[in-house]
Image (tube, rainbow, N blue to C red; front, side, top):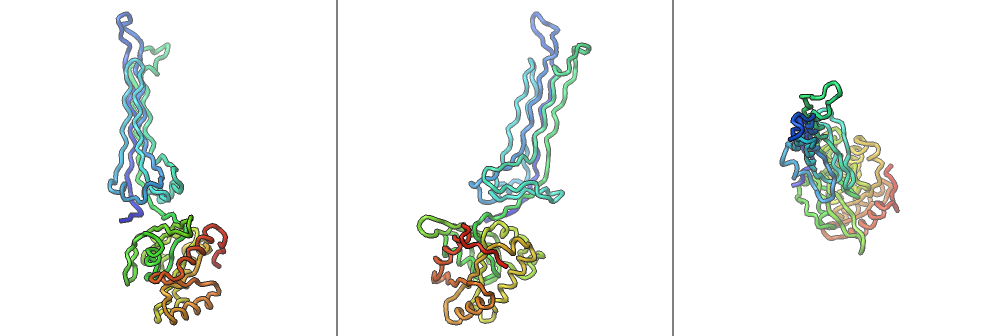
Length: 334
């Protein structure tokens, strides 16, 4: 199952304590201070990687704690620093401060790292405190505590093209027809409750990453239905494919189209201007073709007609999407 958010308690390691020690050798029974410094505590680092596709693996453990640094040793030996804890997250993960609610970092590219909790500094041993006046200091610094923080991780799907449309617009069927993705498909609203990503072959040497996203409803920008949980994923897509069901005689395609566009505009003006391709789905008879024609006339833009069941128009739509993604045809919606 895809999980797109989780909360974690993160605790970096404490620094090792400095040591109080004095050199004791055969010919120097009362040598000077030689207590070493403590080692640095382990930090907690978040690293984005394409090798991880969801937050599920790290969400199973809600609390992560790094090890403490080793204490200082005699003969001016410093303690070893503790190893950092590296948590690998999917590319596209946003790190949010759970208490204040602001975004700390957007891990939007492969290999990007964030030291979210820094390990505590090791304490200084007593050799650091010797002076001409005070030559035998009998104190050392304790190691400092590591940082701790509660964060919320949210994954925004990284896809070249995102499928938008009312529930039951045919998004899941389309994705399964053009890729190996197998989203749940059924004849009732909100079949897709979590995002699915598929890779579609375009021509002989190119591919498209397409995200099938949960269906919108009226009021989604205000949080109705799947609301913001859906819209946050749409922000990552370079091109939107707006799918409109043209098979239902009781539903006006232009009205259905307007509902989604209004929600996108309410959520973000930038999102409303994102390049998109309008797609009439389930066009498998004369009446469906007529509704697709009416939709095209009402909008004044080209409407692509497809039947995912019959595989009609899929190749042409993928090619048009590839051109839009590559910037050949990338007119924003207005």
